Structures are given as C-alpha cells and as structure tokens.
Length: 166
Image (cartoon, rainbow, N blue to C red; front, side, top):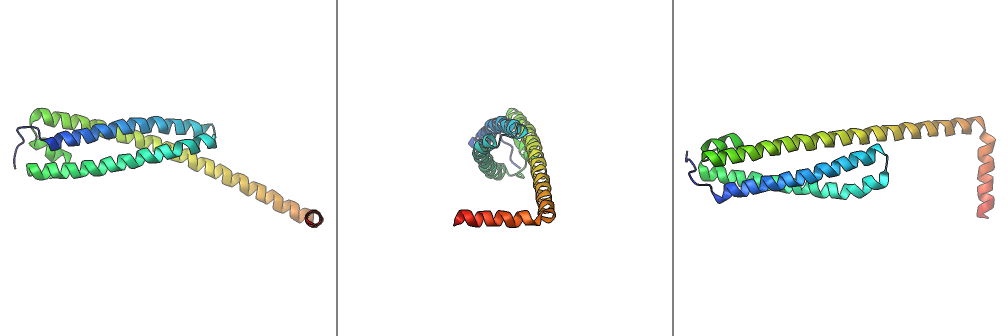
C-alpha cells in the first residue's frame, strides 16, 4: 500500500466535487424549504414554479455523486487502497486526510438534512393527496346519493342539455 506524501490533483478534484455538492445542497435546501412553505399554504402555482428548479438541482447532485465516485475510485487505484473514505483517509498525508474527512463529514450532514426536508415535503404531498382523495370520494358519494334520491332531475338535466345543443 502506498502512502501519499504529496497531495495529488485527484484528491483536490474530489474535494472540489464535494464543495460543489455542498453548495448545490445548500441551494436545494433553501428551495425545499420554499416548497415546504408553498405546500403548507396550498399554493399549487408556487409549487409548480419551484419543481423544475428542484429537479435540476437533484440531477446536478446525482451527476456530482457519480463524478465523485469515479474520482474516489481513481484516487484509490492511484494509492493502492479500497475506494472508500476510511481507506483513503488512512493512506493520505495527515493534513490532506483531515481536510478530506472534514469535507466528507459536511457532505454527510448536508445529505441527512436534504433527505429530512425531502421526506417532510413528501409527507406533506401525500397528506394533501389523501385529503383530495377523501374530498373527491365524498363529493362523488353525495352526487350518487342525489342521483338515486332524485332520478327525475337527472332526466330533466339531460333534456335541458339536448335543448341547448339544438
């Protein structure tokens, strides 16, 4: 197993990717909180307006994740170790290892925070869908009961529609 005595460009690339991920996660978290507010206020237009931005940021984060995984694999191969944080940190120079571990800890904390807000918003959306489903089911039930109770009205409405079409 080789020990890294000088920081390699690959390590710096990995750190740069993590910093980019953190910046994107911060913007995503702000937008997710805006979505939370829009969901709470039942502002469908605002939710619709925010969604493309959320989708774009989530896709960007996936791309960064893929690039960071490839970079970590390249670094692990270069250093002759396993492609995981613990193995990488063990063979890096102490200062560089501390920097990598520090950024990785920030990434993990940000990921938990993003996931928490995503879960909260998903639950708000599910609750709203249940509410809508219940409301529609209730309206449909009342309409069916009225049709059964007043069958002549249905025939009368149909005749009015035919007269209007003529």
